[in-house]
Length: 334
Ligand code: SF4
Ligand code: SF4
Image (cartoon, rainbow, N blue to C red; front, side, top):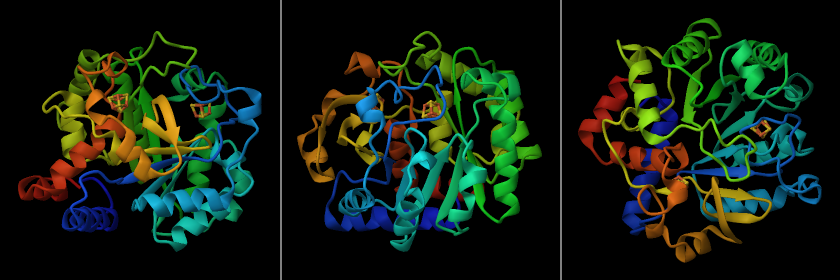
């Protein structure tokens, strides 16, 4: 698996514990959204459309930590909104690291230079910088010129200071296989980020741009062509080989959105961070009161084009960790 060995081992141990306890649904990673406000206005964003009264709210540190402790996931991805706009984001991060959670702090990087002194490199911490393409494509995606240059400068600065830095790239139906190849080659070989995460865009109901999201057939074709000729193995993609097989259409899975749940200002979101069919105060209630069998492709029309990691990466991780053959393959490809 192209994941750091320390993370893979922790997930393996977590899965083993859940099995011994007889837990059938449990989180691998929590998407923590401690605010919805952002300093950008990307066309595909489903978060910044909330009313001003919501956008000005910030989740208290104690609330964030209590939620993560209750869910007991080994990994936390802090997103938003723009997490660096939260005045206590460094405290939330360090409290989670103290509890030995692997923290991925997702950012558009515009505030990294200003805030980086509040953070310390740690094997439990990674920056995850949003880069949707090369300069013109990324600036168009975030609807602002100059952001690509600021983000890449911030990545270089963070690496010079000893931080691990990942990138997160979302692809849309305006992207060609060559565009995917060009940006991943750049991030892998020139910028030399530690690992890259990729995702097909999901059509949030609230997103202003509904035209440019990928359907399942288009997603499979895009990734099959982009991954061809051994490129997939060359890139440091932080996904299981099975999830990449899934993106290419070589395997298919049921949605297991309980594995990457979302906790925001409203509570635990049903059934996943892409849709909002209600909120509950605890992860336990999320698991017990969500009708999971009603979600996934072929079940709910809103899921028809979804191949997002929050629904399908847990399926791939569990498929990897519960198969000796796939575990060996994941280690070989890492
Ligand atoms: S940077 Fe992220 S949170 Fe901010 S507008 Fe863009 S997609 Fe939304
Ligand atoms: S398929 Fe799963 S992850 Fe995707 S939108 Fe539906 S419930 Fe959410």
